[in-house]
Each structure stands twice: as structure tokens, then as C-alpha cells.
Amino acid sequence: MNEQQLIEYMRDNFDTDLIEREGKFKRLKTGRMAGHKHFNTGYIRLSIYGRQYYAHRLVFLFCNGAFPVRQTDHINGIKHDNRIENLRDVSRSENMRNKGMQSNNKSGVCGLDMHKLSGTWRCQVHNGDRYIAKHFKLDQRDEAIAYLAEAHAANGYTARHGTKSR
Image 1 (spheres, rainbow, N blue to C red):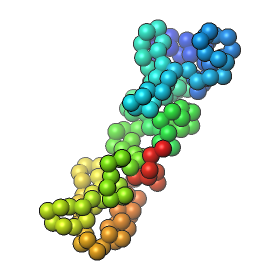
Image 2 (image 1 turned 135 degrees about the vertical axis):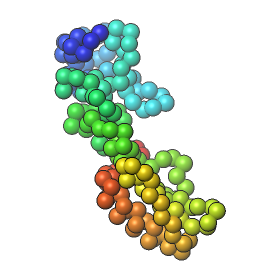
Image 3 (image 1 turned 90 degrees about the vertical axis):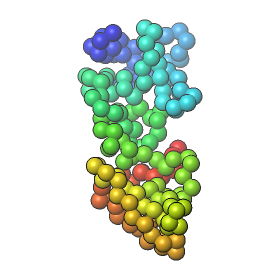
Image 4 (image 1 turned 45 degrees about the horizontal axis):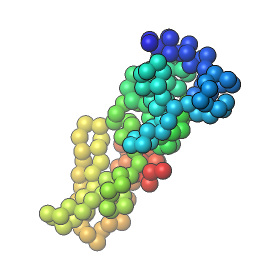
């Protein structure tokens, strides 16, 4: 199925945010979201003529006439919120600047970790080309956090970057 055929199929069966229209599918109730939440990734997927698609990519296709060229970013970080105003086509680097905190983060601050060899706090920020690292003494944790906040702002990180994921 090419992009134009997918758009026509979706136009016939769904609203722009993949809400099922009245009476189109027997197993779906009118007004319900099509697809299912993938147990591992949290993204909504659905099958059209035997092929799996991520719902956010289909919404982007339906509203913009083409699949995203790069990655589709959920601006608010909620993987199942597929409203078009919450989606944007971004590079991998831009997408990572809107990433929430990883579940295995021990310092509580994204980009800050304890450097065991030197016994210091290590701040790491990616500036587009490479990582910039700066070390702070153990009693300078607040200064390290302030440095990271400034570095994130200067390098295009979003306000949501490093916050607890939902």
C-alpha cells in the first residue's frame, strides 16, 4: 500500500487522530482509538491489510500528506498522545533533547553522574558534534546542577528533557 492509498483508507475509516468512525468496524466501538498499545514500547500500533504501523506515523501522514522524513517526536512525551499538535518531524539529535529521564538514573538529574575513578560529579552535555564533560567536587552538587541547566538551555534542550517520564 502506498502513502496515497493509506491516506484514502484512513480518510474513509477514521478521524485525523485515528478515532474510529461510526459503523466501520464490527470489533471497534464508535469513538474508540484504533490499534493497541504495544506492551514493550508504549506506542500505539495498528494493522492495515496485514501490515503493522505506528499510529503517530499514520496521523502524521494523514495530516501532512507524507510520512515523516526523520523521527516523529511526541512533544509532551506521552507516547500514546497522537494528536497532530503533539507530533513533529525532528532529527534524532533533536528528539533526544526532548527525552525524559531514564529509569536507571541514580543521581536524579539528567546528564549528571558520579565519576567513581575521580570521586567527582561529572556533567555531560551533547552540543551537536560531541559530548562536553565537566567535573565538580562532591560538595559542589548544586553548582553542577546549575551548570547543567545553563548548558541544556544553551544547547537547545527542551524544558521536558530529563524530567520524570509518564
